Amino acid sequence: MSKKNQITIGIDARFFGPRQKGLGRYVQKLVEELEENFQFSIFNFQFIIFLRKENWDEYRPQNHNFKKVLADYRWYGLKEQALMPFKIWREKIDLMHFPHFNLPIFCPAPFLVTIHDLVLKRFPTRRASKLGPILYRLKNLAYQFVIWRAIKKSEKIITVSNYTKNDILKYFKVRPEKIEVIYEGSPEIKLKTTTKNLKLLEKHNISKPYLLYVGNAYPHKNLERLILAFKKLIEDYETNLQLVLVGELDYFYQQLKDYTRYKIQDTRYKQIVFTDFVPDKDLEVLYKNASLYIFPSLCEGFGLPSLEAMSYGLPIISSKATCLPEILEEAAFYFDPENIEEITEAIKRVLEDSDLQKKLIVNGFEQIKKYSWSKMAEQTLGVYQKIILSRG
Image 1 (cartoon, rainbow, N blue to C red):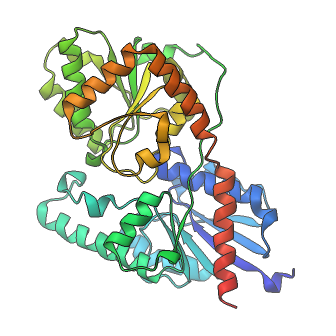
Image 2 (tube, rainbow, N blue to C red):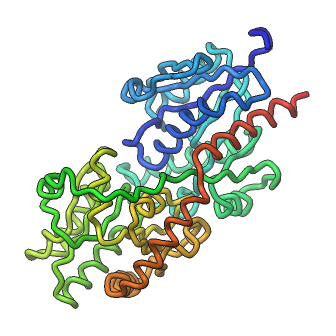
């Protein structure tokens, strides 16, 4: 196909990379796997990958049909709204993919959007912001408008679970056929055991046994209740168990640390470890030496960290809220995330029942086989093609 018939797809990859947690992983895998699946396209697609300075070097195109372009505008900011449209226009984008709802209101190209969850609809709380009440109210109204416009004006909406699709249908007037459910992928099974780099555990004063959580500390992640449930566990059962929380020590983690100091004022405080950001190469050590993985969230779109924990052979105990039973199915032991006593009992039950642990581990290995990043990219490519074909 000639260059004249070339169709230019733009991907907003400003979230690209592991520092941006689940969303960053989604964007990274989407771009990398699209390169691998590009040959299956029925069109002559050229991909423009928009990045920020901080993740510019993390992506190196391996395919001549992929080009990266600097768009160093912080998400949710005025520059994003004012300058991103010019970047899109200058690159002559025919179809733009925003892997998150925060898109420019005046986007100059047709677009599709990935909606991972509706946390802002379900949990509109000022605790999730550093702003005062008036500015928070204004910012939340702006968010609601941007989400509404993204859903209304997009050519297609991709969601990562049926739960999120149903949430969108519940809160917004949108045709069901406009929404495509495309699951995220999961890591490969990592059966090989290792004890390398145990200095990482020493560095953070981590000793076995310990529970593990990997992710951010936004209020809907429900870590305060997890802290209280863990406090009850170590006080009631006089255990030396540790709780290891892995995530960059941002504003929300600092708030959680302060909360923990207030609630646990004795030497027991040392049984809760805040690691700060841990790169992927070191996360392996934390996963492989943990006793189990705990996921207490009140709202999720997919729940990727649990699948990653499964790949390392960790038993999973999980909240039964929102999409998690859909994604994890029989590979997790569930609890009510709003019931502190139930969280405590779930931890105790799984730790004490070796047969249950084995069952969860085996089910976990089977569960992650259902999800594939390659399949995710292939299906997303299919959505691009469907949109182009619908134009006639």
